Amino acid sequence: MLAHLPILQVILPLMAAPSCLLIRKATLVWLFTLAVSVAALVVSVLLLQQVYATGPITYELGGWKAPWGIEYRIDLLNAWVLFIVTALSSVVLSAAHTSVQKELEPTKQTVFYALYLLCFAGLLGIVATGDAFNVFVFLEISSLSTYALIALGKDRRALWAAFQYLIMGTIGATFILIGIGFLYMMTGTLNMADLAARIPPLSESTTVLAAFAFIFVGICLKLALFPLHLWLPNAYSCAPSIVTAFLAATATKVALYLLLRFTFTVFGVDFSLSHLPLDTLLIGLGLVGVFAASIVAIYQANIKRMLAFSSVAQIGYMVVGIGIGTATALQATLLHLFNHALMKGGLFLALAGLVYQLGGCRIEHFRGLGRTMPWTMAAIVVGGISLIGMPLTVGFVSKWYLIAAAIEQQFWGVAVLVILGSLLAVAYIWKLVEAAYFQAPEINDGATAKREAPLGILLPAWLLIAANIYFGIDTRLPVEVSAAASQFLLGGGAQ
Image (cartoon, rainbow, N blue to C red; front, side):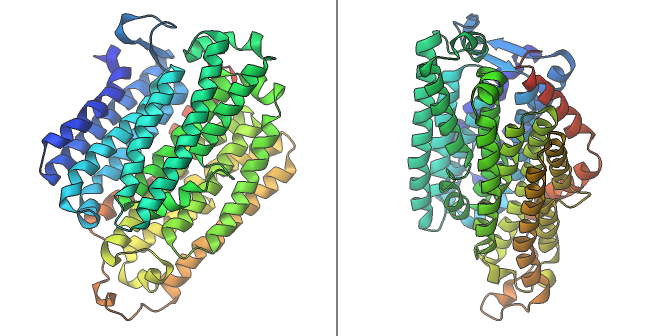
């Protein structure tokens, strides 16, 4: 059984997705989907423990040895990402039944869970596979289901948001496929470990350079790295609340994993950060993204949209860590990958509770919320404090490591800009605090309906918010795993 864990990680949700259509009752479909996600979480925990103790695991599909056959390869980097994706999915799904019942028609709920599992399986497949073409296949599985999930939003603008994401996502996937095609043309292999061995002698090849450029741009589109982020705010603000929470906590993390995988283990550190000026480009784009997205976030009236722009800024911090490229910087990136999943997962679940009670999450809905929905608002405040990066929260831990990495390399300007970028987060989080605690509730038709979010949403939200505090104090798990994974990356994926 343990030998088959890598394939079980992907095959469980992939086979469960069509099975949802055989279960008609919404409650049973939800329980089934939650059980599958929890099972995937158990598998990811076992994989992480095994990899941490004994090193990378390889799994050959169909009995064909790599590089001829498809190989799943689990190492510290993707084991860590698999754990994050499955853990956040399980928590988000625990809140799904309450939220989905409110936001979706009964006839759409079974389809919702089938699409959710397809998206979940696609994300896990991207992370687990050791085959470059399989990355593209699973990317398409997750993307196509994501477009449909976004389109399920009750606002008519959800259709436009899904279409916009479809166009941008298709461009990104096409770029990745072209890059993979170029690599296959030059090396004759699609296995990522084999590619890593064959690319160095070809580093001067124009075709390899073109392959890297196509793959890099395609991944950055999926990552929503500034200025390729324009699809993300509409997608997050128009999708059903549970979809937003799931995507914010997982999808961009998987795209960041791909950027790390291709930059450090497929093309290699020397090619990516020495042969090319990628370090300067990533640091520059990351910092511009932090400031541009944070400034735009301050002026947003729709809070989902505000937090979507905030996600673009947080992606900027992670990309700056990749650009610096030292062990401490990569550790900061991997820490923030985990920490940001906790922050945004908790914040968007708390907003799901707000949408459940008030039907929206614009700034006017926050007036007097500190008195009418104190626990919901407290979750948003604590999540916002973690987003800012205040001490005793996970946001502080990863930003501390990022600043330390910049100072180690004498990048004093980068360190100062990271701190200033965090201060911009104070401005848009303060808007919510001011409306909730210093303004009177609106007197209108919905005023009397204001009450605490249902426990089905509030408890999962608080579980993630509490994790923001717990892992901000007891940092052993994320710090130890991210430190080992960063050393693994700098070693070119050899362990």
